[in-house]
Image (cartoon, rainbow, N blue to C red; front, side):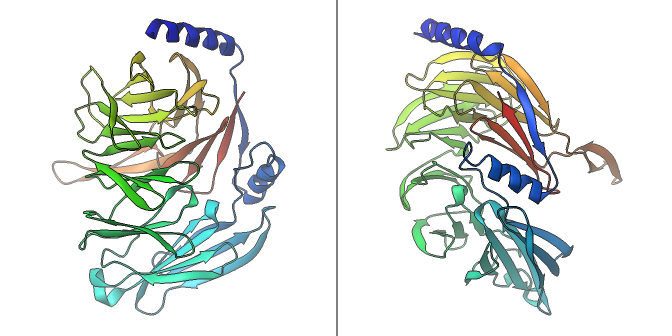
Length: 388
């Protein structure tokens, strides 16, 4: 079976190899230019969203400015948000969902201050407000859910969490949540949400918990929600476990080499294959049988398959590199993402602080159909690459 699959993949790879080409189609610091590109390509990429919002910090914890844009990228409104006397203030934009969250707390109460969260839409209209948590005056305790589903808010002391829509409607709740931090992924139809609270991986269907598994780790879920992959958070294991939506273990895979870290994974769009990575090695698995098709040394951590399933995208953020591998694990292209430098500080044994320059690594990478989209968290600077 393995030889047959390899033969098929080799044939496909030979057909594609001569044609693969990655082209940068957009790099901009202008929301107007970005939105007009999205509008121009709307028919080809209907799920790609324009930017409606941008937040600028004027004075940390005290003063913020919100910029509102229309679909064409025209700035139509500016709003200055200032902290009330004695209050701490933070503003966060979720532009892809057209939402703003304003977070306030009473500085005189310190860490015990209730956190006031106010959600606004892309027009600056208030949707709802709520008080939540007695944690540090940050977003801890309130997180966004993927795919624009809404919000996750937890109370670590009461071991309880709620799932909310962006309109403030509660559509689910979870018990025995022992952490106020959360990572999450979801299926495209938003039916299944996969949560990780460091202790457990929790599958939620339509707001109801289906099951939870331990240990947790890096998570991925197939497009139809039928398969769930968990890369163990026991860093020396190198084990990937795949479950079905009923919580049954379908198969597991263990890397033979020694290493550290949590395995990453991604399902192909047709759910036929699972790419798994650990400590410099990537393996392609037959997701029907769980058999290894190949395992090779590869650069970067797995991000996603392209939609046609012909390529696997990996990223090394510290090197500012994106790698494109074909279905046989052959490197086809390397993309450089020039997001500049950063200053890293380290303390010596003698207590002296030493500064040195490193490549800026706090950027994101998303595969959207045949596009690779990167965004910097330091500045508004998206890049779009097209795989031909």
